[in-house]
Length: 488
Image 1 (cartoon, rainbow, N blue to C red):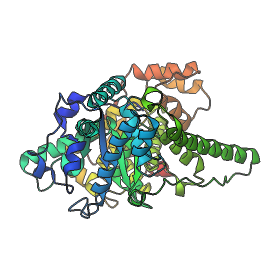
Image 2 (cartoon, rainbow, N blue to C red; image 1 turned 180 degrees about the horizontal axis):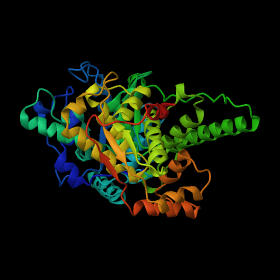
Image 3 (spheres, rainbow, N blue to C red; image 1 turned 135 degrees about the vertical axis):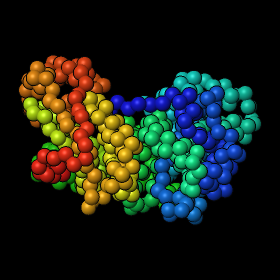
Image 4 (tube, rainbow, N blue to C red; image 1 turned 45 degrees about the vertical axis):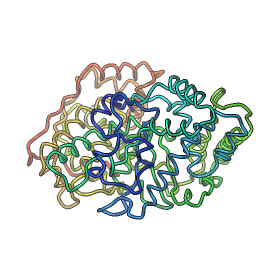
């Protein structure tokens, strides 16, 4: 999944980014207009050690956090991140005073963010943050310079963690004309901010996070399609200072005994790796920053993945988005890339049906915008120009954007012109020759395939632009069955 990411200069120019210190100073989640002139927003010269994108459900339409429990969870998490960084810089005895265990809900996730801040692990580098190796040197040197004045170090560090929290960091209704412009501009580029940040999602036991449109979109965009990149906090368990939930062993629903044994062994290996990582934190004598801090979060996510036996307990919060994008890409490969004929395809109706089929809930007026943002951040690079143009069409036509509803699916008809015969014929050079198999092959854009036919087709698609044309409203469309096939 090739995502666009923002540099820090682009982030600072387009968004209001608070510091962890500023967020910790809030007594409640505060409307942006009330703090716009009061908080010290990070500017271009304030590139942070980490940029945290807080994703959360609004509890009411009027205010996201009327009880204050979400902000309390954010406060607890930010403090734990700061303690975890400090804990990696000291000897074991002091480390265990700061962070006695990694198994607690919130602590496990905070240690992961701290690891990234110190430049460890696959998610430690972001275009919007200082380089990982440089961060480690800067943080360690300042910590050493503080000596025994740990409060000075913590205050310094909290000023260098960027936080984006929607209610506080972007204009909220009612909006002035200027605020409305900023609000729309922020929404139009929110996908790029999410992809450039470390996602921190607030969850509750048995919540509907994975079907809430904006929560799902933020999770999907920030993940980079990696199961471990986004960090998820169970607020209920954090409040009770409980351990993270270790999933039960899977009950493989397969007839083949060998396959069942492999699944069980995978779970046991992941469980052992998670426990070993937590134990490592307890026993290493020297500062962990001088060796390699443990990685229990990745082990924990692997454990969750190997344990779930069915869709009902799937720990992947953005599964509905994955399935939506997969269905749409398969249909377009089948009826565009592999077809010798031109097709007229109602992308608006297709996306609307898929959103509802996967029970992704949002206001009717935002359904298509969300759907096309999912699609734009999918696997097939060649489709991006068309999906980007779909978003432009929605922005240009207010009636189209507002018409999304089960009863009146808007028509966003596009004529898809076939590839040239030589390129199209390359699909037949690899087996199996199906749209689903080719979606998988074309998606692996970061690696080269062992099959020369796959690499040649990728190169051919990279060298040409797919031809498409949006048609006026009222144009005759293909049979309804084409759309229904998407959810079959």
